[in-house]
Image (cartoon, rainbow, N blue to C red):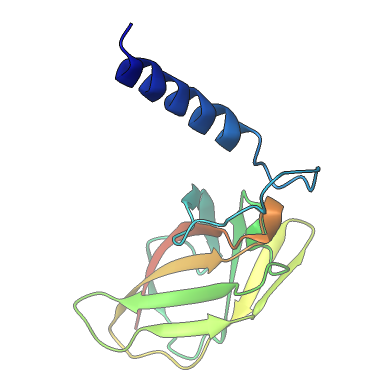
Length: 148
């Protein structure tokens, strides 16, 4: 084997084994854990309860939505939990930060006055802290409803 090839092989092995030992566990000689610049997004399942998914004739002053989500990170305890109502066809996107309250597996959020005759898609998202202190990203599409 040539000297250049031996060097390259040794370099690759050192790089692989060096990275494998850098988990950030704080052991002697380990490097600190480096969080990714963009957290990997996790998509969770969820469903509107009230108003129901696909409901029509919902009062624009309904004031609150209730829903269920599979991920505990979306139950309101994670930092940056936000309920978002996006009107179909454009318009003002409504964001309700830190408004989720969960009891007995059912979550709710207060929402502002809505526009009449508008279909809103509802999502909930959060930025939970992951191992190593990194920010994560989790979200669930809950469904949609139309105001009267």
